[in-house]
Image (cartoon, rainbow, N blue to C red; front, side):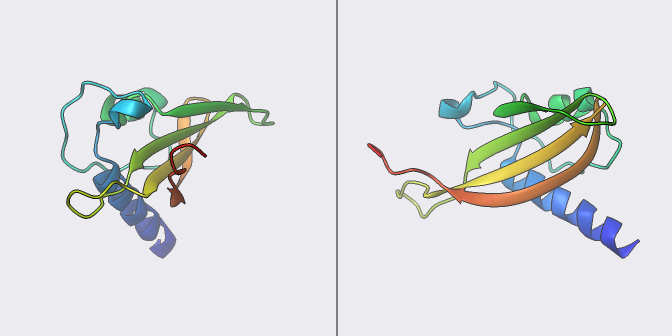
Length: 115
């Protein structure tokens, strides 16, 4: 039960950081910002898209349990006023048979311009 609570807390934190709109350069949606939402294992893929918009990246995965995809949502992390963001907040979802199985939040560096 404790791990499920941590998982839900992690999802909530990730969604607060990501918000519901993507960065314009990363395939933005026109959805307005929404209150924080909680993702739960078993949630329908269509419901996730309704809450978060389309993922930045989708990768099809060979999986023995049926159709599987990795969805990635990527948004520049907050930076100091006037300074460009140097990292992305990244939310990765594993979707099997149109249902959420697991989610993971990480950060990654934004490549410097010209590199």
